[in-house]
Amino acid sequence: MASKTKTKAVARRKKPEHYADAKPGQAWPSALYALLQEHGIKQVALVPDAGHAPLIKLCEADPSMTMVRLSTEEEGVALLGGAWLGGQRGVLLMQSSGVGNCINMLSLSSMCQFPLLMLITMRGDHGEFNAAQIPMGQATQTVLEAMGVIVKRADRADEVIDAVEGAMKLAYNGYRATAVLLGQKLLGAKDFRKLAQVE
Amino acid sequence: MAKRLKRRRVVETLLADRGDLLVIGGLGAPAWDITAAGDHPNNFPMWGAMGGAAVLGLGLALAQPKRNVLVVTGDGEMLMGIGSLATIGISKAPNLSIVVLDNEAYGETGQQDTATKHGVSLSGIARACAMKDCRDINTMVEVQALRDRIHQGGGSLFAQIKIDPEKIPLVLPPRDSTFIKNRMRVSILGQSALHD
Image (cartoon, rainbow over all chains, first blue to last red):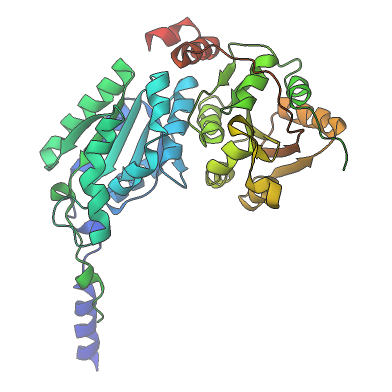
């Protein structure tokens, strides 16, 4: 019996990885958190995505950052406009599917020249399992650019900090809306078939 | 039915002796109403971004915790951003008040019915979204009490005020939103805001 229990425990450890850990132990989320802190980011607005999970955890643990949990991503565009009116910088975290929700609200950034930094984890981009993610994922960059947002991409870990720092400077030095797309090559793609397996 | 309140009188009362109150006006008539009460550097009338007024107020309230922030908006605008009441409710910003002027219609587009005309309670939704002080208001006595509460620091305050769906002349704020933005930032943060 004892050995059977042991086998089971091993099998449990081998359960499919969660998407958030598709590429565990990467260093870039910590470096990204440090960058946001260094540049005085105070409001972290988000609709969560697994690709953002490590960064969210780091920001949550920082008492100098206020986490704002949004019902829909477009709220973040307006929220961070208000933050800027009051003298605070922020960042908006979302998955690519949320970009579609933001379209008209991005008029606010444009008409007011509010600085805006969006960090967007990609779905439907590279190796996607879920067909539902592909239409918005493929349209993400086009939609953002159609609304006048400056878009940068990072597909490798060593590109993340440079892309985000560059976008943040354009946003806060130039009063522009910017987005960094964190690609699925960087984040990994989850395999739903594996997630559906039972022990 | 009792006579409905007049929107301009309601807003003038809310903004009387406004001190350093920061005021967001949602797109359409509420933006004209806060301007009719007196154009002011601490006003942020919105020319667009429907559904964003309340949560823009949240961002400002979080950034300026020592100032009181009032969002004045309409029922249609609030309905479009209805999910933001959950965002605001859980944020527990102690200095944010939201007032909805409810004429039960999309006034700017030809007085078509909104959902509040058909039984939807915005104050009920706000209450269910964990906002602390949620009021339904139908009289000027209640408006005066609301004004005093807002100026003491609203503290997760939401009020739905039934108003007359009257058509009245527009009072337009400055048209360039970058001007409105910079004017408010200088008023709150001082001249240094122009060098941030």
